[in-house]
Length: 381
Image (cartoon, rainbow, N blue to C red; front, side, top):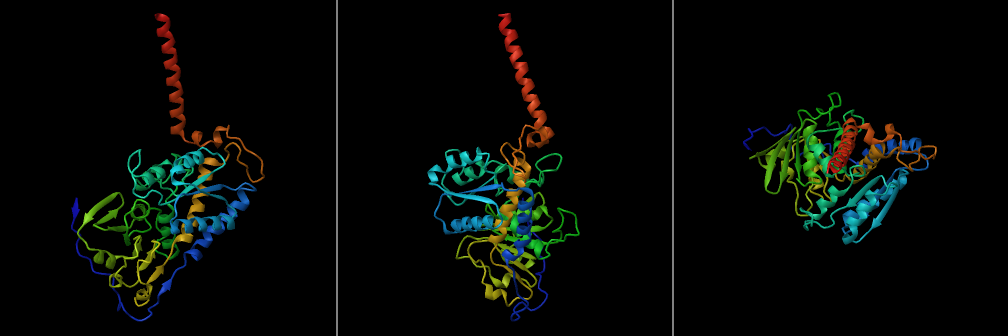
């Protein structure tokens, strides 16, 4: 389906090039502090001497990946979360991941990408995507495995029918959401799922790790999102993605928020495409816009880096996974340090989901019936 969007006037309300016009630079570190304070409080009050454990797997020499690993380790140390970084050869990464999936002392796993890049996988697709989907949903702190991606795109917000277990959301897209919330872009007086209604947002990047899930997340919260990639622009609204003839310039000029995630030094957003009162979020490890040019545009808010907020969301996701799947598991200690046991049905996520419980009962019943039938037929012979 090809959509020809009707022209819309740019959001210019005053001269776009006034000198030093109320420019605001936003620190992701400062914006993340309330979340990290909540995390520290939860660790101190709920987990005693055995906090949740996060495992990082590093199998590349990418400087950005190493920086992310270092930030993660420092934040976990500061917030009293147990963190272990294992550096492995990329040929051994799959085995290391499966071992971590099976280790009950590990509650969250993160792989620092890229590892194989676009190299194909024996199992189909590319190897990095295969690894991403191989992390257990009970330990996927980045929220990028198939289970969480599928739920995000379908706007499924809970893991269970009783709506007691919230889904984990991808860390970097979630960090952008929290930064937008911190600057009042979300209307918190509106119902959840509609707090971006009336907002227009352009996301320049459509990768499966950042751009596409972020655009879907914002669209599911009510925004009209222009998803821009190297060869196309799509309009995304809740549950819909339609190609448009609109240019990147027109999309940006209409936008309340522009998110930049192009992994290249060569890309720079044209400042003439930015209207006054726009919020710019730079997600890429490269600066996708010239900061000095932003200072000449009225009432621009600029986030140059999101890494510190991303790490806070990683920690937040770890606590969510622990509460959803690991609290009460065998060998896990509560606040007093006493070991708890998972034999109680009420503490096992399997028994907390009616669908999973009755599926188990059905499987057992089918096995019993099959066994009886086999014995009966054997006796008849």
